[in-house]
Image (tube, rainbow, N blue to C red; front, side, top):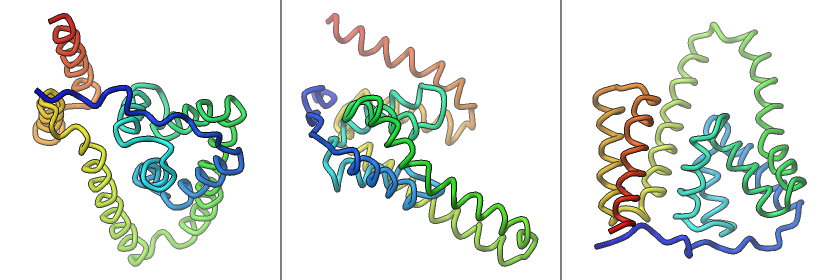
Length: 190
């Protein structure tokens, strides 16, 4: 029977300079305006190879249970892992700097031109593109776990609960998370 990727499939944190951390997270924040997750995966896993695909998914899963934005949590975690508290601060500033500047500029523009029909059409187009990016990233993130039966079962349960039955996310997490932990705990004892 196939098992989940082991904890040994991690990449040891390289000696990453603060400048590299800042520029990588700045690039994420700028490229991923409206949805950083696809860009974070691309930069951290595919381009920089600072994390494996399975490690990225595990860390992001942990960050989803923490309060605050998932990607901000991941940014702080990786900053600390690579360069301590200074790395976390540099990574977070890199991630947030350009979106902060851009959102201020867009707020001024929207205040002046938001009632125009073309502006509403542009927002619909951007929303469709963002949905495509999130879907593509979800497929990439799930790939290391496609052969793991429990991942397929619990992923299917969550999809049906939220996507089909439209149950609130917090109720689904409260129901499915303990079941998945129990499943792993029972299998570890056997």
